[in-house]
Length: 90
Image 1 (cartoon, one colour):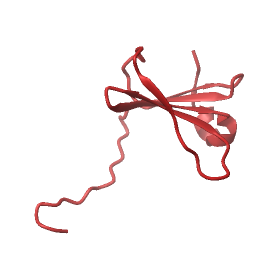
Image 2 (spheres, one colour; image 1 turned 135 degrees about the horizontal axis):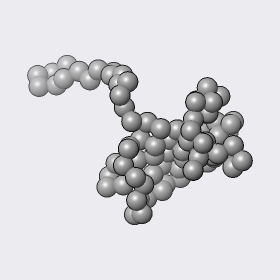
Image 3 (cartoon, one colour; image 1 turned 90 degrees about the vertical axis):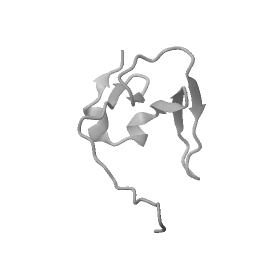
Image 4 (spheres, helix red, strand yellow; image 1 turned 60 degrees about the vertical axis):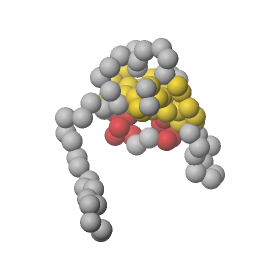
């Protein structure tokens, strides 16, 4: 590393606000990355998936920040332990 550069470290945070909700009927999960209520005006952008993976993942943006991630066909795209610990979708 050169002068003035700093090394980034991986940091785990047990107090981070990440909530997962799951609707088994729709097989859709939402991963909320903020405690703030989801207000109108956010941009929902579908993400590209790896070659050969037919999935729908949508990232929500608000004021230049990622606020949440929606995953359709969640039972096939997310780990079962994550879905088992998810809150019911309201």
